[in-house]
Image (tube, rainbow, N blue to C red; front, side, top):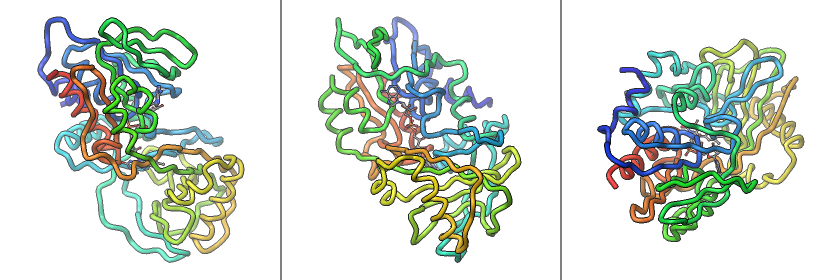
Amino acid sequence: MPASRVLDELLSRRSGPLPRVAVIGAGMSGLALARVLTGAGFGVRVLDKGRGPGGRLSTRRSADGGTFDHGAQYFTARDPLFRSLVEAWVAEGVVAEWHGRIGTLTRGVVSPAKESVRYVGVPGMNAVAKALADGLDVRTGVRVERVEREAGAWRLTSETGEDLGLADVVVAAVPAPQAVQLLAGAPVLAAQAGTVGLSPCWAVMARFEAPVAVELDGAFVEDSPLSWVARDTSKPGRAPGERWVLHGSPEYSAAHLEEAAEAMAPKLVEAFGQALGRDVRAVEAVAHRWRFAMPSPPLDATSLFDPALGLGACGDWCAGPRVEGALLSGVALARRIADR
Ligand SMILES: Cc1cc2nc3c(=O)[nH]c(=O)nc-3n(C[C@H](O)[C@H](O)[C@H](O)COP(=O)(O)OP(=O)(O)OC[C@H]3O[C@@H](n4cnc5c(N)ncnc54)[C@H](O)[C@@H]3O)c2cc1C
């Protein structure tokens, strides 16, 4: 089955006058929800403040014309629905297995990590978001600031004061701290979202002239300001070169959260050298601050929804702190909205 149909045909097609749905956030969860409801016949609009869809499933260009996956690194697939979607994406070339050598790195000492099937988007992680967004009504570059009650519906307004129209059902598919304000019309849901924190992550995109000599393509780093490093160019379908993504640990990232990106890049490249047990010099190193990277811990509910008000929320902070959890949260909320 084509990947698009896995979600498009998940629910039976509804008829009659259906509520207008607005989804704030075109990450994995918001796009999954939009696909399922659009497939069931609902009119769904997705709004995102980013330049393109994807959220934390994100890919950036490098100066040598290659790319870096500076957010989600790879994903696993355990749930049957997600597995069938991933298998279809693999068949379509949107996703491939990453056969990189994964291990643990502790001050120059390498040890193997647990075996796992790891998938990545091709040619970058954001290919998955692009595939999910294909054919949907998605508008990017617009930050929704207010969701206010008007004539039994919800009026959305952007941060620039632009009227974004009315919707009967509004979904905040954004990280929990950002959902709180958007859920102000449903104080109980806003309070629930307010209990979830997301730890930050400084991500450095580093390019090297020559291959970094280490018998690993991805590593969980211990005893270091870093928690993860990956040779991005070892992933399938990437342009040649030697590009690495370095992730600061949650503790280190939180302690340095407000520092300038220009200051963070050399610090984390140096930490990479310490983890390897020798100096490394990057020819390009750019840092990105993920203010909300990983939920800690997520809610014990796959989604939030008030059917009477028509306000809901989904995301990795509901179901599980990963790409798979985000998608399943979006699907779960789509079912609740369709059953409303
Ligand atoms: C550094 C890092 C590494 C990670 N590594 C992995 C990994 O290896 N494996 C894995 O499975 N997961 C990983 N994750 C987690 C994974 O990326 C997330 O679980 C998943 O992508 C979350 O999807 P989401 O839809 O819940 O949220 P998001 O992807 O955050 O999407 C939310 C969207 O909402 C938009 N938005 C927010 N506020 C507004 C607003 N007011 N108006 C309009 N738009 C708004 C944002 O622009 C964003 O596009 C990682 C995350 C990070 C940051």
